[in-house]
Length: 493
Ligand code: FUL
Image 1 (tube, rainbow, N blue to C red):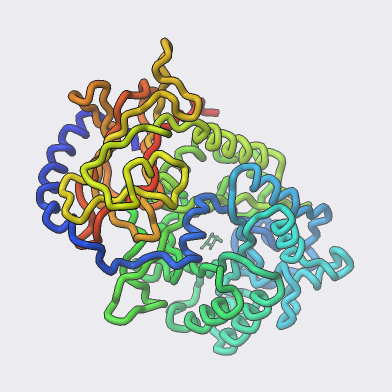
Image 2 (image 1 turned 90 degrees about the vertical axis):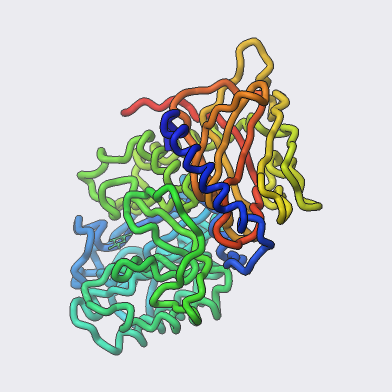
């Protein structure tokens, strides 16, 4: 979001009304809103997840295979999963999801229940196992591995449902969850040409299988059903494949049709935004020069991670089994841009004054880098305001110097173990504590909220956050981070 002054003025007036309207319930004591499970919290804090589409489509040029491809076309002669993981890690990604079976039904691991697998290819003398190489590289380099296992299977049932498929999928999943060590996510894609998939598939059994052997793995990725949010149960799809989330994103919401709750009780289900670095999900030679530009990737970052969503960026291996050089270069460029942006927090070490603070959760917690410390207002607090006096000593930055330091990004984070609470907020800056200029005005915060300013702005003497409203009677806001950063210039390639 690029705030515009006129918009702020109108919106501020509106917010003032909303603020007074909500001030009655904003201070209710912590209520029973959904909180993240440990596995969800671990997942949500990763922010950057890489997606890898690889399979027979890599060789045929299709995006959706037909299911009758000859396994022998799969010949990744230079396969080097360490090259994949190394690139992802250097770019700051924390998890990698390998597509081990797409809709065509071809398996990248030796599924013993079908002959449509990698071991029916002469590659590596019929003994290849891409999943095994992948998890080994992840373990060696300290990356969380994860898998995508398409429910739709054009090799097994194509367009006509076969009831025996459920048993096949379950045995397959059971094999996957018990042969590759610990992994962190299982993606059930929603695409399917067969109607009523949500009724035909045995979601509860799939979840039991996952939970019984992979307690750290989140399940999700299944797409919407008739306009209802992603089936979850642990993560939720943002609803488009462009990698961008709307401005308001709640990590808890109504339970899905596939994983219903008693009395439709809301569930915690943080969102991901998936998008490919290329036009397609699979590698195609003719798309080598159609990569997303750095500037497009950065826009996506601000509208995914900066809107309380994990960014799930697809970078597909090529026919030889490597990430294409150009893709790796773009990925690293993106990673370097983001890490350079976070290098200096101009608010770090600022002195905090708060409208109130619960014992043990003082204002200064927002200016230390630890996301597990947080500032929390008292239940009766109607102002819910924190003001930081910036010291100019933040992380080596000196905004008292003759040439003032500038920032152009504002970052806010909520302490998620308490659940997501903030419904509306305003960020202002001032040099004298009297005249204030709004630099951020919005709704939800969640794991991370980023504001990108139109222009570089001198780091102010004072920085203020006012929480205008929390959602319903969810309790006081718990804010873990409040920072100012400088993102580098971007020129459109
Ligand atoms: C979709 C699939 O149909 C695409 O091929 C791709 O896998 C994407 C991530 O999800 O639903």
